[in-house]
Length: 432
Ligand code: HSE
Image (cartoon, rainbow, N blue to C red):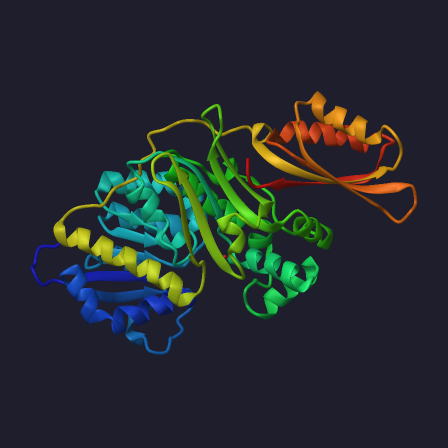
């Protein structure tokens, strides 16, 4: 803990890329205000990077390639981790915590896989771990879940937490581009990485969903608990079906309490009715929609990535952790007292939309309805149109809430029958 009344709070930074360079800039440009808010100066004393490469506007003397030595420096109070990766990042942060330093991190993958270990170590050491920037960039959502809503009972958190995929799906709607073209454009504009797997296959969103669910439901949800599906299979036909249904296609992180009290956590391309607040979240923006017993419905929206927006979230954590150190306290730790268990993915309830091509003959619709009814699936709406005059029809069926496994069983049976031509496209639909 800090003793001298005017001693600065000394910050070490691991990584200095898009976000880190903005954090360094703000620490210098807003030094006077930050000092006033913390009650002591915030001093950046070192930056560890993989290769020694000077950044414009940052004192070259701050750079080192020895992250372990920087973390071990006795004059460092606070470690800001923006280097990413799991190893040696975890070990560096565990060392920092063990040495009594507070940590600010934006590392969603690390938290989703090793958060429990880090939080326990921080609790034992009486230091802070803050991670507002790990989920949805600049949007304040960690602190609202961790602090503002801690007296309420959250029942659901639904989010558009990946800007790359939201941009791609939005382009597919607005320009009619197919998935490949929309992805290529996102890569040209710098929204998508050259290897887009983490974003388009939902890994990034799944890590964020695990973090959100852990906080919202006071438990520990790991990456392996998240039922994940990306957007690479979304076609122009899916987008057309969405529009016909009055919906937009979104990659939704969906975390909620199931009727049996277990927690369902998934990431899926989902049909979102245009009346839902998440439907209006366009381009690369992120948003998180929270439902709780007492507050009701809350919506948080903003930039989910980018240097300055993400640095804003990092700086908020840095100031908070620094304020705590000046007062000789630690902020609220993890609240993972609950062990509700994870809902079996097949038991998760969702509305569904089935798109299928059927023989246009008497009794076909009745047999499909009977197959759904036999598994307790209730039909909400049916839409049929002729299909090329070849004795087939295109059928769209929207269901009420039904278990994912029940739908899969019915679909497998129908696909094996003579009534249905080709595979059935199954999509989840938001709503009850
Ligand atoms: N790649 C992420 C996105 C940002 O597209 O939203 C960092 O999590």
